[in-house]
Length: 309
Image (cartoon, rainbow, N blue to C red; front, side, top):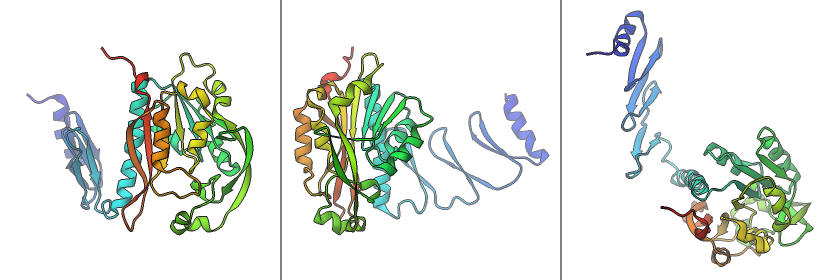
């Protein structure tokens, strides 16, 4: 026996209304315009105005998810891989937040607030404390955070000592306390010219109590993206690094900055602090050779994971 819903759908075309049945209980109703409906998996459909234009859907293993691809999306394999890695990294990080009960993220090297925004889009609602030392980026960061009461921002960098220093600016998202390496200058034209800005640097252990103030049973996570300076930030935590349940650091396979540690050295230092790798995602990759330049390395303190029944 037909439902009332189904009978209504069948009647509507008599009144000049186009009806496209998408899935059980779901329909597209329109008075004009041509739509193409393409299956995108069980009980899921793509609705496209006009011709489909080469859209396809690809199952992601046995996860139940499907990737929607347009005819141009696979033309630049490197660009597609980098976009997918960024999404998967943030998805993995927020999954680790839920597993480990993370309730405060220290976002070191926040730039314009891109990382915090991605966390919010993926569902993290806990406290974020962002640190950005350069004036121009900090102004944009402050603007981004102004309507989020659980997102604090601080105009300083973090490092091994409480001090001031000169940072190279004008390199967009790649401003660094370290000079560009020969490899970096060959790869990026932005490194060919530079100016410096004096910034304030604080130790992580000097700001941690303020960052965690008011949180019952804090479970902090440390994110570092400081263009070759992450180990200096880490060193500034001192004994308080033991308070963190996890971290994320940009580690280099091919060094863009003079004096930055190689990936092996950085990962070894984090492992010595009790962290273990849960995910590794390419950040940049050479177009000519396919070599990965940098990875986002996600590590958690396994002993901090909640006990399971």
